[in-house]
Image (cartoon, rainbow, N blue to C red; front, side):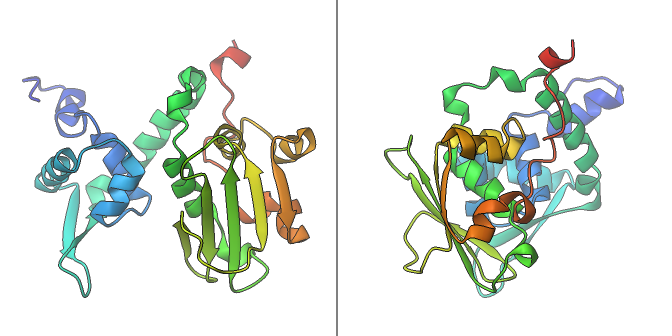
Length: 228
């Protein structure tokens, strides 16, 4: 879209103002590299539209692509101009947490996006063993309600198929409760006390989740309704 204005906000909007573009940039800045990873993090975007937006971002100099090692597929990386958008996205997220987050509805609680964020939030160096298996069972999800996070000490893998390994810690809750905990809208310990999240397995992992799993960067921001 062209606005035909010299205003820098208008010119920036021509590059990043199209639907999905900011969220694609979000995923790339958060470490998404392969097409399938980006699509998983974006949810309902069609492959055709994602391909088109990636081509547009590459043409605008915000990303570059490389052939993945040992594969015919591509990986996408942020350029310096793209990296400079990180504080902009953080500011937009701060605004959204304050002014728009109370508008969440049931459809907004996306289990796949939640698991991506939980996967990215695990700190392997804070886990007590080289390999740790974490299982989540979401009682409000009749399909795809079982998920595993697998840490090998360096990387975290998320999967919805049983890896066939002994589980170290098991969480049973709802997508909304776990999302609210990660976003900082609920306390993990208060949710356990109220029975909204049930935890079993390794006692250290169960009692100290907040020490090995980072919360959302927006967790400290209260909604506008609490400060007006």
